[in-house]
Length: 318
Image (cartoon, rainbow, N blue to C red; front, side, top):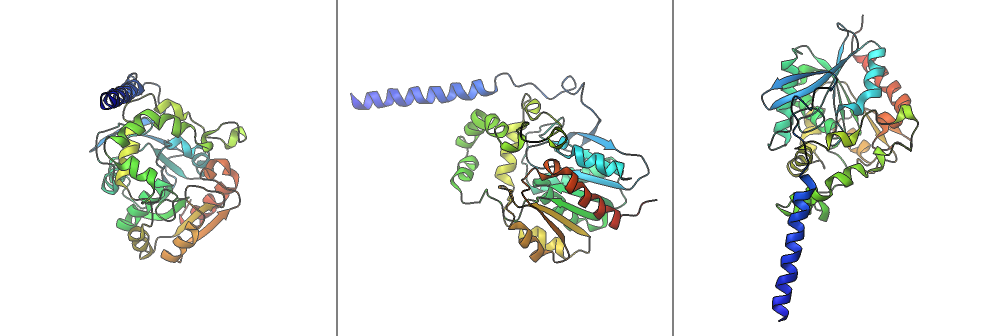
């Protein structure tokens, strides 16, 4: 009798889990031409999918390319791109595949995937001369990897709270292991992913002055298929901790490098600053007091001053 009851309870729990999984994604929309009808900017067809991009600033000015992080698409750079454009630069922002208005291909989102993406963007838009490159969080790791492997294409590199150093999502943590596990991880991401992402304090619009908030709607991209799957694949296939392989190789180049960290960052810990200086002694590092992982928009006036000074020092302007 007890065994039969246990099987019934187990069956009910499994049925509930399946229903929750189906319900969590039943109304997801495709990312297609109709969805993109009102998107700003333009689109580039690449080897891995269509990428959404925007130019800021006047043609003919020195070019700075900006690579965003894991979850927030390219509008994370709105304050910074506008400041750079106003200072005489031509700024390119784009949504990584799987985010924003870009395609969400079913693929393995690993180091190689993002390096191909960077090359496709650069080549597809005809950026053959060395550019300034900015990477934020995961984008900092991607940009560092790109610069280390293609130093001839990067004139100067600026990192905003870059991943790959001292990150809270440690490789042996229970949460990371659960997310990385098949079936269980997929269920967790699909059922709870939206609320976890939108519940992060850095997306709270009431905690900052309007000019120092995210200038886009995080919830909008969650309406479309493939976003959570791209986040999950990236989390499973990229190592964000202790990327000695990338930063030591970057250190062997002569690319001018600056990096900014926040003393109150709970994602990329401020101890990352010392680690980066150990790998790349020439790095110009800044620690913003009370800066969080969203310091590039929450502390945009202070950050933009450092950003503009760096590129004006290392890129020629007319």
